[in-house]
Image (cartoon, rainbow, N blue to C red):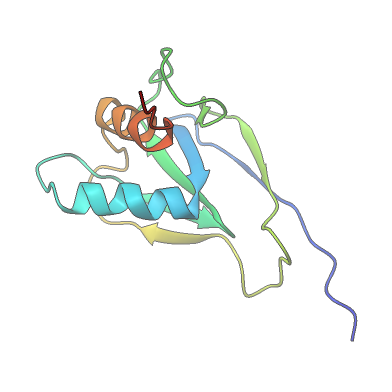
Length: 122
C-alpha cells in the first residue's frame, strides 16, 4: 500500500504574538525546565508534527535567539511534519490555559541558548 503524500501546513502567526519554534525533543527538555520552576511564566505551546511553537510577546526579537528559532508576528509558518503527515498528526496544543499566552522571552531565550550550545572541552 503506498504511503500518503506529505502535506505542508501553513499557519500565520497572530498579530499579538511573536513565536519561537523548536524541534519537539528540545521542546520537551525546555518544558521540563519550566515545570520545575513554577514562578517563571510559562504560556501556551502548540505543535505540528515534531515542531513546537511557543508564543512570546511582540517585539521579543532582539539579537540572541538561536538561529532560525525566532519568528515575528504575522509570519507565515509552513510546517511539514517529518516522515508522513497523515490526518492523525494535525496541529495541536501541548499546553493551553486561560492565563497568559506568552512564555517569558528572556528566560526562554537563555534556556534555548544553553540547550543548543555545544559543550567545549579544554
